[in-house]
Length: 153
Image: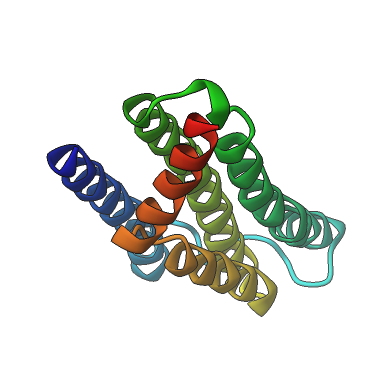
């Protein structure tokens, strides 16, 4: 079981690094001018729409992904053994990471297109959430303790 947990943690860390790499690539593309800087004129309906989508995605999608992860990793634990629970934890960690990364990337692209700090702020909020979601041994142990309690009862 210990090897399985170590393998899960390694995989989650690699996936987190890939997520960060995607975010860094988006920012590098923006700074190099591949994402056309300032392509959306200021104070237009298009800028307002893009920024509104970014803010709504940040305010709705990010808390929703955290809640979705919590609900799906605690809901059906009574019927799972530890191996199934670790697989389930991995899948939902990956779903959470992908959704947060997409939100960050969208807001970063919007920042470069509009040159408005709103997109940068929303991307920064997403980065803070990825830091909060970094996999640790304690988080997995707490999760397995819940699985163990529900599985025994």
